Image (cartoon, rainbow, N blue to C red; front, side, top):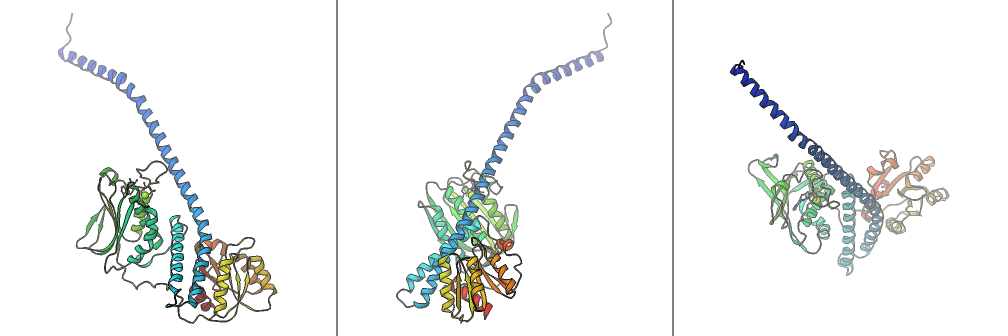
Length: 434
Ligand SMILES: Nc1ncnc2c1ncn2[C@@H]1O[C@H](COP(=O)(O)OP(=O)(O)OP(=O)(O)O)[C@@H](O)[C@H]1O
Ligand SMILES: [Mg+2]
């Protein structure tokens, strides 16, 4: 027998070894791992689908809440217009120094608070188009603190610390309030057994550029708001993901995971930064930094009707289906010297216009009314009187009413948002007719 050369033996041996290894892999590793791998993928897909479904359900719920809020806001704005309006009428007779003055002011201020709440609801459900304006940080915080107190419940202590010599900030008030609401609700959720919540404003003097997350905040003076809680705190792996949309550690139905991503977006839009520090078991602090606004100070709306002369003359057609609002507006206008023809619907408004022999100088009309809405009524009237001027009064923003109103650039069309005060109403009428 011929012995094969040693190199041949080596090749055969190595090939055999390779073949064995290949078969072992095929038989054991891949057979076992393949089905397991696909099962895992299926499970993951089912899980992902469930998460998506939950998110959809939650966002649909939010949408429903938003619609509801819009509806409630409409009715509330009517009520609040009437309440603060009648207070304005009372204030005409009970000036500062009168024993009733303080009580009336109390009612009026509470009506204002109610109006703020409605604005909150609308902003929260993002039904309002809002614009940035100059604001005093102290006022922003004071105004929203009532709402925040109600949000956190009884067993959490809220402390407000107003900084000194704060500058102005240029922000969209509704959006900034939404940021604060989101942060405070998170803090509340982190303290189910109660704790301390501190809201603090101060001026942060940044000496050299500061790293915040992936960004760098420039040196200079920044207006800061801190929201600090003594709650559960967050471990690093949670902290790393909190600004991701839909990231939540809350159980299904409790959180959408949108709170912080929205807040982050709004602060970015305002040219600011959001910094977070947290320690498990100790608590969490969110710090909002906003650029200082160098422009002019905001004009504060006076609570007491302005002293300027808002008396005038002429006949006004007042169309409003809400009795209390119409009564207040009619009295306010008559008090200023105008003659007022009242109508409680679009249809009666049209009749009143046709039957009167007086020349109507101005129509003031609600927008949304049953049967015939304000814009439709106006459409009928300008066929006879193309130059008729109108003030549309509504709880909705101009933006949302555009489809109803059509061409709002028409100089004869004016707009007044509910709730409005006596001063706002009479000042606008004077401006148009004066
Ligand atoms: N103050 C806090 N203390 C402890 N954990 C917090 C705090 N703020 C946020 N978190 C954590 O960050 C996660 C994301 O917060 P985010 O506000 O974005 O969503 P959410 O509160 O879960 O839901 P949503 O705000 O949409 O209802 C929370 O689920 C929570 O785990
Ligand atoms: Mg949240």
